[in-house]
Image (cartoon, rainbow, N blue to C red):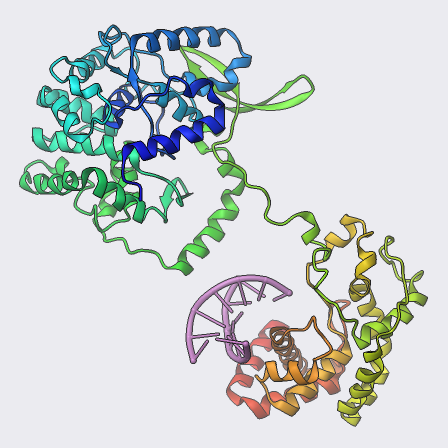
Length: 576
DNA sequence: ATTAGGG
DNA sequence: CCCTAAT
């Protein structure tokens, strides 16, 4: 699938074009991720290496490109407005002998990648800073050495990277390792170091984050296949050999760090831990444990908990928040972040790394506007209601936009209404009649909107949005019908009850019946201890006649004694 | 597709 | 009421 560097390059380039227009991509050239990463590692961008969303597309860094870019950079530096795109200026070309070389790996793609990633410009003092020119030149020598001309050729890959590293001493390799992974290594194994560096560079270039999610600053999920593809395509043998080498050098514990569990831990996690350079390496004790792939349930719950907490924060990464501030600019408040550039601190408008997605549901969904098919039929109760509602319209605090139209009563009204009576047991019918009045008043507020699909369009959004979507209060007659249905067809025969007793209630699904029954059950047992309470409920919700609840209790008792016991216990706890 | 159960 | 898993 993702087989070649070029593929990624194209993806990336497309993205760039879409993102920034053609201006920057014009100079794009195919390049080598390893070389790019080598250079990249000389100039740490921050305390966290950005997770590449696309393969970086480093090109040949030809001198004119250098000059053009540098010039561009300088000119842009003068204009604060241009600092909008400040993140593309993170890269100040180090003073190295590579600058005159035609073979310095390009930073065009690198620059663009930074634009995409919107990584803040940071030159941490504890990291590899710009004044460490020795380091830079050191690596640059290696990277740009004439001995390895292939290093800057398009299509160059891991092998070339190895050759680059061939010329480095152990010490240099260790330095490179540090520059690459952000930590020291004491490993003396030149080969291992080489492999690690190469692997790190390659993998950090090609790890796609498609389908990945960032949670609590960790990447979770999604990357497995892509990662494996990546390994297959680029450096599977490298990884394998790396492991072997590591095992061959047990004397050097560093070599083993974060390595032994590469294939047991999530690939992405491994990547983060090993290659991003800033990970908690103390926490590598943790990595000794085999990490199990989280269950879907686990992921769901974690994301729920964390998601809620992080929703706001995630838009602005933690590391940015310190420098975030809001400034007023031309009447508009602009969120900016501090950026260190060339020793001075400047403020640039903050651009979130997270692309906001369009809300899945528009606001209409909150009201029930969208569901023109939601309820085609008008139900007996509602039709009945319609008439009353018309009278009550002034009394009840109705939604102003609704014209209370007593629409034509569906012919099925009469039929269903009739069947209502037929199906109702005598005792329930009495109750029905007694309680119907308050019931209707109560439900009118909830269901009247649904009676007039055509008019609902006129509803003020705010008013209707307040209501929970798809909520429809249960009328007493519905409850009674439900009880009756249960008594007739048995508990749990929801679809049957739905089909036979609620055929005219399109909005009541079998699940609804089940849910309501559950509530009735709870209510019925909750009420038991104090008969006096009768049908009174704490809040203004519908009062269910004790007779009905009694029936519910009897039915439940008949059906499942065990369950009843649970219900009694639960409801009592809840009640007292 | 239906049901049970948690949220 | 929504969602999910289990059946």
